[in-house]
Amino acid sequence: MNISESKRLFAHAQKFIPGGVNSPVRAFRAVGGEPLFIKRADGAFLFDENDNPFIELINSWGPMILGHNHPMIREAVIQAMHEGTSFGAPTAREVEIAELITQMVPSVEKVRMVNSGTEATMSAIRVARGYTGKDKIIKMIGHYHGHGDSFLIAAGSGAVTMGQPDSPGVTSGTAKDTLLAPYNNLEAIEELIRFNKDEIAALILEPVPGNMGLTIPMPGYLEGLREICNREGIVLIFDEVMTGFRLAPGGAQELYGVTPDMTTLGKIIGGGMPVGAYGGKKEIMDFVSPSGPVYQAGTLSGNPIAMAAGLAMLGYLHDHPETYGVLNQIGMKISEGIKKINLELGYDYTVNHLGSMYSLFFTTDPVIDFESAKTSDTALFGKYFQAMLHRGIYLAPSQFESLFLSTALTEELIDRILEAHRESMIEIHKI
Image 1 (tube, helix red, strand yellow):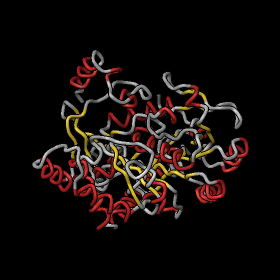
Image 2 (cartoon, rainbow, N blue to C red; image 1 turned 135 degrees about the horizontal axis):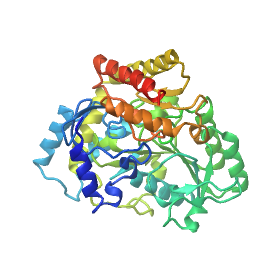
Image 3 (cartoon, one colour; image 1 turned 180 degrees about the vertical axis):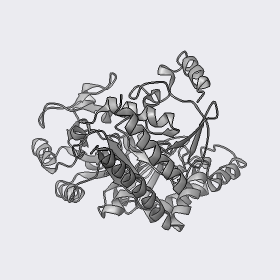
Image 4 (cartoon, one colour; image 1 turned 30 degrees about the vertical axis):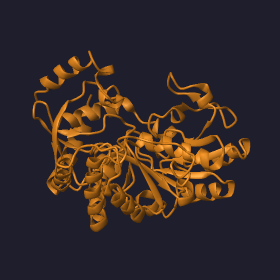
């Protein structure tokens, strides 16, 4: 496999781009080696600058449910581009996709388009604070809500200790308003509330986390959060940037039957184009300018190209609910196949799986939160990543990222993935 062009580009990129990449995980620091530079994608494949094909299991971190470069979405984008690329003014497509989102997502009565998942979560927190008149928020340790200052907070030493900035440039004043709790632990939430009574505006979480590897909510956990937030007057926000429209037409909230007050959404609603959205109850969303006093704006919000791609994607998912049966079957075949191979080889590593998302953790402990995820052998994962890459399978370059599957994965490709897994497991345990 010749990857010389990627190596040349990475060396050149480091002269002009911090670390040579425009998002940190792309640098391959967690798995060793240097990143591949991608030229094009089609179906289940990425092709690097040397035209090497890779079966890929990231799908642009979630949105490519139907695979890359799907003809329906591509055609929608091409048609929209004939009309112009940006207007900075309202369009009919914005109204159509907003109506479609409210039909599909249980919690969303009104929705505001933005340009990224980070924008969506930042805006949702601001609206929740404006609506409640309170300042503090609760987030879960290990959950990722984009790079907004309020979310880049590391845990303090306990429930009564404020969080600490997790990145230079985040002020201690910002950190004091962010409280952290472990996922799947209702007692920790109750304790935070006792020490911060009537000061908490919102509780935000990934209902099904994908940013510490895939982690599943324990029975009663989401329901318990809903009850607590109802009792305390706290705005419950589900960050469904990854899970929205992927786990079900209405996301994790539909799958689990728990309706938050607000929801944030991401790239899937643009068919992979740069887009995000936040929405929720009418009385909360009416606090957003120009209806209400909470300001948020964006020239590219509701961009016509992104809206065209999103309408094509969401319209298809709305009209073809059988897609989720196909996705779930693909996810089951791959995750169960990996478990079977591992056991045949004598390795009882943890595999978390839900629908079309899964994670292989190099630990024998159950993974239910960030602490248990950190028991994984990250060095061994790095070897596994490289072994799979050598066999033409492109995984997320971090132990702590979920994988995302698409309907483009055929039976033949699934067999190739599982055979590569078997060979890679044998290889890395011989080292």
